[in-house]
Length: 97
Figure: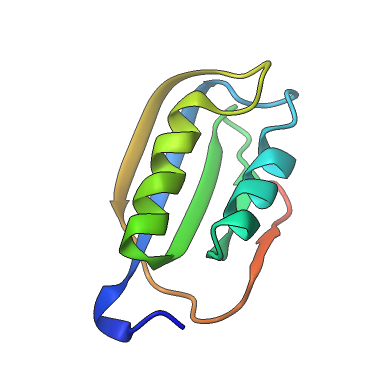
């Protein structure tokens, strides 16, 4: 269990070739592997948005993984900022916005 003092939440916007390349499903797989809570979704502007919450080292690892993405993605920018911790919700895909 993650101690509250070590738990953080990061909101990210991913730009580049990130839609139509299995990015959201890949993100869910990676986040679950790291034990993170949060969500991922496509946005109408062609970006992918996500919220990662959990142990600070796992969240940092996830942001690093997002810079590479799945095989066919080409990530050109990752905007990361502090997010609001959703609590122990698991990690899932949300509908596009």
